[in-house]
Length: 281
Image (tube, one colour):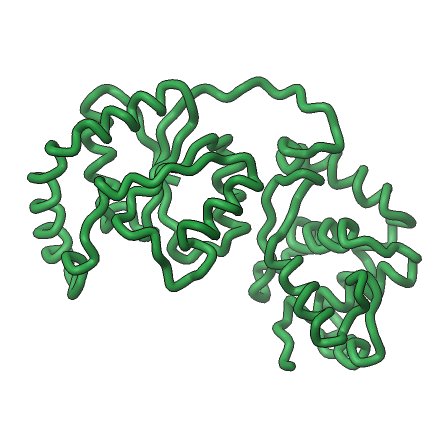
């Protein structure tokens, strides 16, 4: 099995924690979080993203990698100790990254110190935590939009959670994606775990056949001109969005990262014309 750089970093973190007799997946995740936030690893290699979850900053991709490393006998069943096979990868990240990991962990003698440090310095990642009493006020209702293009699920959830999103409205005609995690069923599960509700409104989507061969801005404008003509016929769904957005913080979801190349912009225009502000995330 060929390992990504992030997985090699993960193995080195597990080993360094073991030398301190710290053996928990929670400590592993928080250590990786600090490597990204305070030592810039995400700027040099493709690394993990994190979002506020039940025990502070969390990464689905990290847990996925831990399971994969376990299944390939690089770490033990508890996913907290490196095997002999896994140790072969410990010297493959370069002296710079090895030293960074040692420096980052030198002030932490146990898991509690790591957790206390993260919770104190990064309170924005504790807003969903079940380990502390939550006292924050409920955020005001508001309308947002987002495209998932180019975002892994952890970065996507971080954007939603940090903006206190309560409900995601999927305006894709067909909630399918080449990225499995954004297929309706898988996405609903991840959203539910993060405390976010999901509604699918295919009536506001555009047929896949209409989206083929879009190459230029003119192609997109022709598509949206046609869409604008049929959109008023679905006003009942627009009104439903407005109704929900006056009581919750909602986000409209589609694929495109570029707001101007997505039909959610046309939906947003109607909502804005009815007196409600929209923010693209």
